[in-house]
Length: 89
Image 1 (cartoon, rainbow, N blue to C red):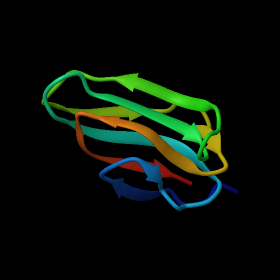
Image 2 (tube, rainbow, N blue to C red; image 1 turned 45 degrees about the horizontal axis):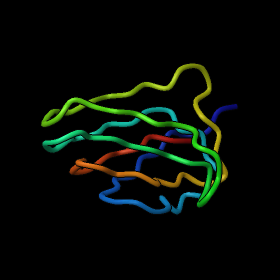
Image 3 (cartoon, rainbow, N blue to C red; image 1 turned 180 degrees about the horizontal axis):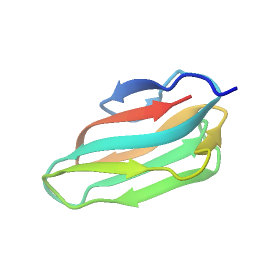
Image 4 (tube, rainbow, N blue to C red; image 1 turned 90 degrees about the vertical axis):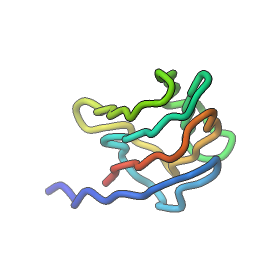
């Protein structure tokens, strides 16, 4: 049985503080410049998602299948991004 999807809004680098999770989708609002988002498996862990975006727009990134499994959602790069919402279970 699958668990319910939850969401969390983030506005900078660091841990989402949600514990072990599967990243299902990300919504990103970008600013000017060259927006980039990097998520690692915990602080100092391997990179699991590294995305570049078009500036000054909103973006939706769907993660296929069962999502990306991490011990902790950790945002290590949050460049020219206003905010993001991560959907996980």
